[in-house]
Amino acid sequence: MTTLKRTLVLMMLAMFSLASTSFAASTMEKIVKSGELIVAVQTQGPPVSFIDKTGQRTGLVIDIMEMMAADMGVKLILQDYDWKGLIPALTSGKADVIAADMTPTAKRHMQVIFTEPVFFAENIVYSLKDRDFVSWKDVNKPEFTVGATQASSYAEVAKKFLPAAKLKEYSGGNPQTFQALVSGRVDAGVSDRASVSGLISQNPNVKVLEGTVNKEPLGFAVRPDSIHLLHALNNYMRLIRHDGRLDRLLDYWWNSTVWEADHK
Image 1 (spheres, rainbow, N blue to C red):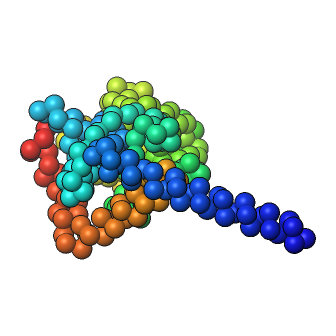
Image 2 (cartoon, one colour):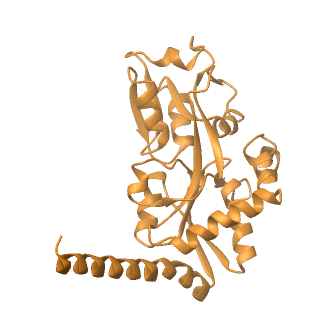
Image 3 (tube, rainbow, N blue to C red):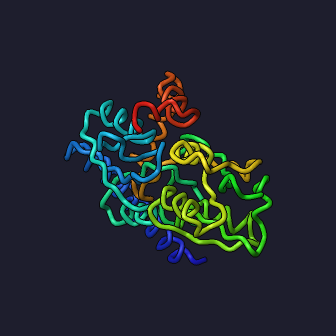
């Protein structure tokens, strides 16, 4: 490489670095100036985020983001989207953060940046109690159809671990897939254990099949230029994990069904 070419490349890299730094500060600066933290959530997925019996948005990620906004001294603005609309809402600038039970897949990392894992999920397969399925592996046959949330990691889990079965994807989250099972449109559904536990409490005719399909980390997401906000989120998760607040929320919302008595 000639000296001139090397100089030009270094200048371009320097300009890119400066531009990235400028953009990185913009999201946090906007939050500070507006006094608002805009968060994209999916409200159809108890216990992560949903509308409870009083008509209020609530759930694990809602409590976390409300706590963070309060500690930041800003107003929390929640925006509701179907699962497939969460990333477009973020990348288009409509929201500052996605707070959901989202798996940081390689494909998603091409569009957004994820925080460190906030919590973890055990993916399982569920079906009606009157079916002969025992293990989740029993569903992996061509004559069976499994349901999963559209454009979700659950759908990818079904494709990877149940390749012989047919797959139907549903927009709107776990409740729509669950309803598809109950109404007979699919033979089984794929989701995480905590979410399905909440849905089964409404319909005891559904069972979780034996075995865990796989385990996945779940995190929040920001735009690639929101580095300051990414660090703030990671720092806050470390803080509330250290002082015990995150564990208390996980024990209430994710590791048990205690929340049902208060919100269903």
